[in-house]
Length: 359
Ligand code: NAI
Image (tube, rainbow, N blue to C red):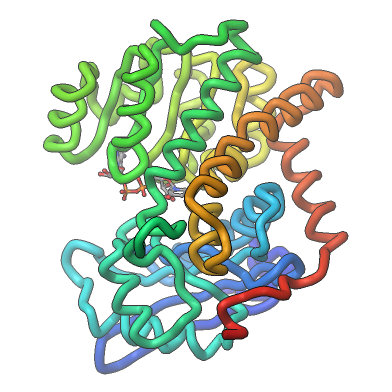
């Protein structure tokens, strides 16, 4: 297995392979960049087919966090962790405590939180071993708690902006949206879209989640094979990555792709293909920053819930600027966003002075 020569290595600052015999923990912590603050990004638990697949995922997700946090203008660099295992079968409290100790050994260079397969209760176990953690149960009216509703809020704002820019309508009334994945983010996104008058087509591998969204939000359920090609205006991927790929590209009928999933483009060329087909791609790490914005407020403990809401809503104007520059320069939105993020990381800025680490 290649590490430093891995095609996704991209100048990562640190890669930590963590093993704990007693709990069976096998995890990778990837720290891409601390140029803009401690590297922050969630911990994913997934049944990877092999170690190489886990490493590739960790590296891609970690770089994505650097870009996401840079464009969200928060006091975090980028990192990510993956735990190799089936979240439904293999998860134990001891495993997350062992993971917490591994996070603690990074001495504040990596801050963890939830991602796919990991819940608030798991992070509470992590918090028994380290203070370098966010996404814990909400305390009073302070910022924090489950990041998914914040991510859904940002994705909703982003869909609104994309529809205004690309379809020329300022209302979501009657706009047809396909939501792939009805978990923490997908469910709350459907709720907001339904309230705004959008017409929903949905799919999830979990039939119960489909039924709930169908009955609460009048959504039409289709099979997981048919959701990407559904006859809609907007495709919102909210499950896993690489949904836009060589196979799916020719089947997409939506005019806008805007969802929460990380790494939606299998390759940058797939972004170019979307542009050629006049499909507006909303860069995933810009639109899905709501959760990490909330996590940042919780971690530093100096931001109110209202301030988090304002920061998440700023995703709209941020995207508008990217769309306008992409149109003006005839360039893909993913290229504009990457260039902006890379230049922010290159420039760097002073590390935060106020932090709960100092307390
Ligand atoms: P989740 O684990 O709560 O939900 C994912 C849902 O997708 C589950 O209901 C699952 O059954 C479904 N799913 C899996 N494979 C599928 C398939 N092939 N077709 C249809 N549905 C499928 O995850 P969550 O938190 O809702 O996150 C969704 C996506 O958004 C992930 O890619 C995550 O990395 C990304 N994201 C989440 C953030 C958050 O705050 N939770 C923040 C930023 C990104």
